[in-house]
View 1: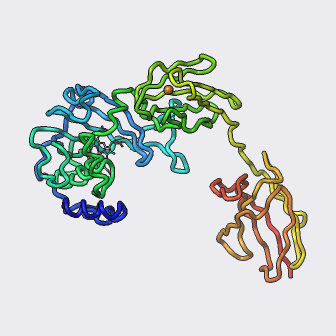
View 2 (view 1 turned 120 degrees about the vertical axis):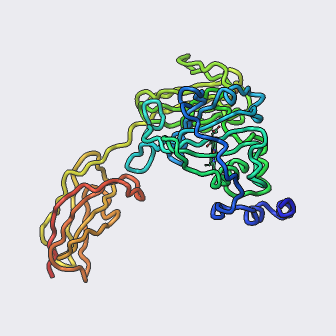
View 3 (view 1 turned 30 degrees about the vertical axis):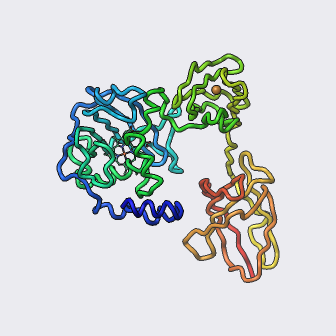
Length: 387
Ligand code: HEC
Ligand SMILES: [Cu+2]
């Protein structure tokens, strides 16, 4: 195996990925223990320490990470080398999503839990992990359980856990990824624990002594979380003195509540004079509404034209209208995107148009030409096309 990795390193990283040893599809063939030496840690909610709560945007999950006393005793200098007897687990919750599949945020900017589905556990003991063979990462073994304590991932299926932790989050082993896991004692995000970062999805970060982005756009009432992703401390103070984060270690975050539309909250770092940033509270997006559709005539001949007018709220000459309609005699809806721009326009009836009664069954106004994500407002307006 070493030889494959070295050889591909010499060629290029792209080749390494292709030549990597294990892929998700081969999960069954990954080496793993056959006996559960991890064990469901009954009563962990009381006995273990809650280390941090992490909102995982990728998986639409909340992860509540707990450690037993041994694991929770690690100090920042020791993070990459947990003591024997350490048990780290996370509870995985599904989250509430909006109609676009985006996680719903509570008033602190955090994901909202739905159901506790699985408890993922890793445990470090002397000699643990040997059965993972070439994908072993230190002396950890893995298992996952359902909330009632029954097994979700049997030991023989935990090769994927070992492999992904070894590579630092990927399911293919390459010369580059192998080294990621090796430095971390295969447990991630100790920064959140040691620095009390909130675990919320960041709206901005501090990196290389810069706020990225320099101006964070927010909606009225949003909670904005900014992390220190630098390797050094910062201390952020509002220009108007309304907040002072104190010393922020790497991994720490600060949180600002966005006020009314039009507010700009400016801040700077007291340790690094060039670090300046702001939160700009934007107007809420206009809610477009259609309440009526009218045609200048209810019958129109092929070769002539008619005009259509939409009424409702916040509609302008720049608004696009998608329509949903039924052709004469049809019982199914069809859609025409950007059928009209502006509240009123003329439409010609081309030769070959089916004659009979056309029905507009819905209208969807939108401000961006390519955004067809809104819902149709139901209508029932007819236009008869005559020969
Ligand atoms: C696709 C990659 C991947 C797989 C597969 C995977 N993990 Fe993880 N695991 C991670 C990452 C990455 C983290 C760190 C949390 C984060 O940053 O998202 C993590 C964190 C953890 C943690 C919490 C430690 C911490 O400090 O956050 C435990 C416990 C854990 N995993 C157990 C397991 C178990 C048990 C399995 C198999 C049943 C497993 N993992 C499978 C990537 C993976
Ligand atoms: Cu600074």
